[in-house]
Image (cartoon, rainbow, N blue to C red; front, side, top):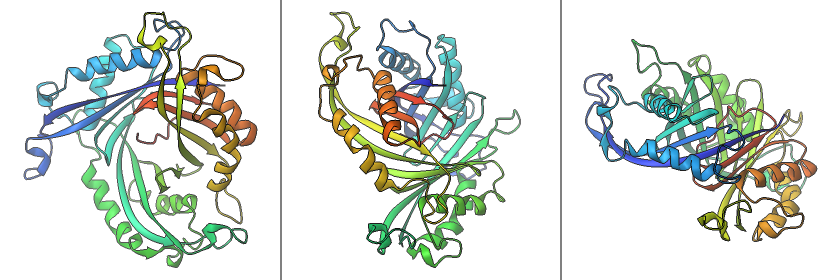
Length: 367
């Protein structure tokens, strides 16, 4: 069954302090962040003023809520304004504004930390880490570039599910994740991964599983592991299922066919769209990957060329060129050449766009 989520993002600047933290903790002191919030909704038809206006209207609603916090002291709204408590507050405010179909609300306080609140009310705290390593893939076909010794600036995001309890606002905090990550960083940073036991074939998928096995016993609330091999591709592992993604940008023109003539979106405009293809497949017994990232790029390239640097509202077949319509079309065309694709994310600006999926939406990637 096809599920479409409209997504909106909005930022705000705010100060806070967290009294629940131990004496001497740096975040007990007054400080500030450039926050970024995101809401994803399964919106009913006719919710927006016209078909295609869903993203702009959802962004407007989220912006109004974030405006209540902008350039404010967050403690005036919340006793302990952690990222998790902020996400729950934003969710409640959006519900009060009668925004329908809320599935996920996210808050990022920094580029390397945040919280994703899912439809069941579970808050997944996440923290991003980086390390510099070399590797090669020993089982790839002859001539494959990854068979040569090379290196990456890897990024790993650790996601952990925590539930607020009245007596404990900090069931899992960023410091706890930092402490768990520290020995892994020491083991991985400035190393050749192939020389580490269990990483003799260090694909992104194998690395995500290796990290899961080491963290899960110490962090039972671990939700999933995200590994960025490069800035545009990587893998997720939740203990049982491997998923990979490939990201690219489309510089294209659009026009919303159903916008009233007087509406700003009625004119031809354009975006640098961020497109993410998500794929799910079992690991190849020899290669150790779900799908080769290079194969994803090569097989999708003819589809990419039909969408990139084109007026999408004039393409053969016509149709709407709003984010949800384009993402649906991209999913259909991607599956024709890559049957493993089960989800497409398409963002027109940071955090604002559409997710169209045949599978799970729980494993989020920060934007």
